[in-house]
Image (cartoon, rainbow, N blue to C red; front, top):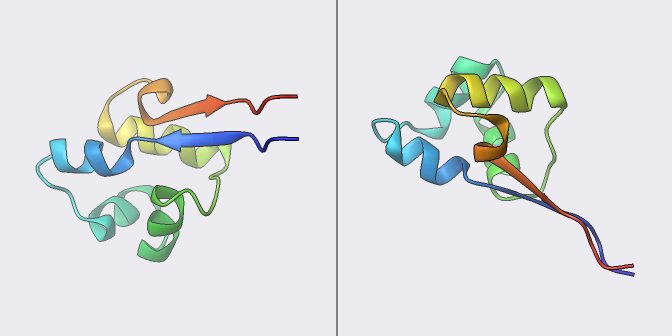
Length: 73
């Protein structure tokens, strides 16, 4: 049984947003830099609210930040 994957484009979006640092993003969404690092490296899945906050910061649809890839059954 394969594990579902949630991929993200946070690093690319940060770079395209005036080379925003992880700390700057963390400050804008109300979390620690370590949390941004964990989400960006796919070690932690954010809450739905936090995911929407990120999309709002980057001014893009949620699907541009996160993509869900179901595992094979």
